[in-house]
Image (cartoon, rainbow, N blue to C red; front, side, top):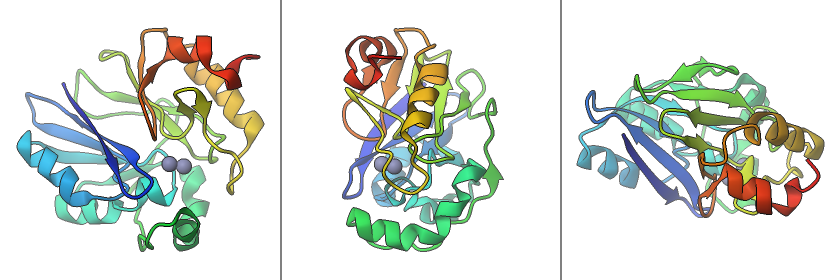
Length: 210
Ligand SMILES: [Zn+2]
Ligand SMILES: [Zn+2]
């Protein structure tokens, strides 16, 4: 399995390239920006993008999706509860100090329990609302990895003061969908350093009462 993580755009969103060595098919998660760098990694590994997955509709995660979609022809997947944020991407980008990403087209709705990606290392969708209503995390049990978007960070949790944010919901999502996973699951966060479920269970101050 190929898993490359690169921090893209001014907010350094962690974009994941998740590729299969045999079929050369890849999932790109959160292509927020820097599509040229993403494409360079794809071509270095000889990967073809078949799925573009957005963990939530914040401009730093979704900003490059249309460009990647137009050069690869791959469909864009997102949870429908974040559709309401799409008309406000320009405003959001301004708050975040990014340039306006323009319109983003979503091809396919994600739902809890959906699986996508290469056979043998597919990603299962966990709906984890709280940072936004449509936030999802992606779990690969075979590879012992979780892509947590902006729901869970190393030592922190996603902010809940933006539209659709809900502090009780994010704690509920983390408790019922993420902390029930095994301690050894490696977590790629939406920003910053990676962690593990076990480390966050033990050391994350925000989760101390869960
Ligand atoms: Zn976010
Ligand atoms: Zn973010």
